[in-house]
Image (cartoon, rainbow, N blue to C red; front, top):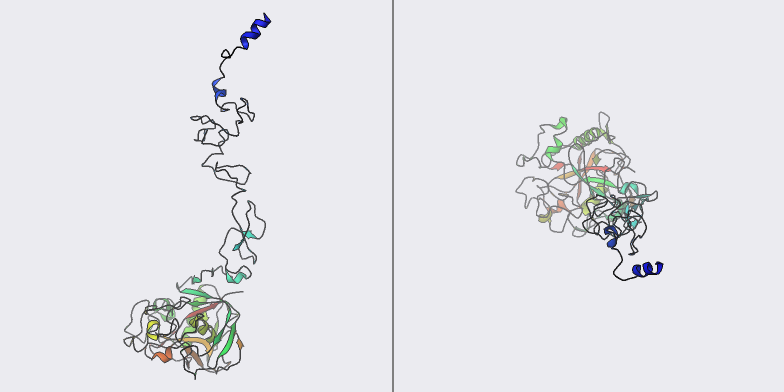
Length: 402
């Protein structure tokens, strides 16, 4: 009898069929073992289509783990050494690439990255720093970003352009006559902001002291016409007002008989650019006769093309120089911070002009004069309390705080 039973059980085709849940995979075994010896354990790969064992909306064959509802093609990849989203890679394989923040300003260097789920100290997920050795080159003390070159004041919406410290030849430049002041090397050691345009009438009249201002030019009445007929002292008061609105230090102090300027490189508030800063900005790294080019009428409103009037800012044929600054040649003369003094051929670092005197340097030329006055190297001076009608305006500047 035992032999007979043995023979029956050994006959091919007489074996009972496998249960449905073992026929083509491990879909219903709910274990980590390969119960049906098909080469796949439950938690590795399910092959039963039409089955969604973990109820996450993805059936076996699509879901790479049909017994864990946190693992499916819609899941977020996290750092747990598991392929959470079924794309064949773990988070450790496709980790974010934090950027080294060497100067600790909160902004990283895109050229210095690592792959890590949990980056070490000194790495941030930001790649916008343009100088990771100097925190001031990305953000000043108030958090103003400067890598993209622009900033807006919080009060009057003036657009400011960032200029970085550097060295240049402060001189006659290409296209200027030989009797311009001597060539000399100037080194500026401070980054600074400078207004993209001359201060407009809309911006000027936000200061209550200058509301309803009597402009010298009545032919340009738009809000974006530059404010004119300003004395140097008016410009200093406006800069102080704007500084106070933003909680910054005043750069100018009135003694009753004079307005005294602080060291422009130490002052954190708004001010006028020094003469050297003005020329550095106007040249924008180019050795051209005018700010933005060598053809005056393309870049400057002067007597030959202005129609004998001032114009709205940034409206010449080629309005911006290489830094994006408008009208640094022509339209209006611009007050600088410096008292008038002679310029020598000696090299200078962070020059601030003469130490005394009642005249201040103006630069840039204006709509009423010819192209020689619009040269980048052209310079003149006026009494600081003078209101030269229709010809003189201002441009804001501000030192980037260290």
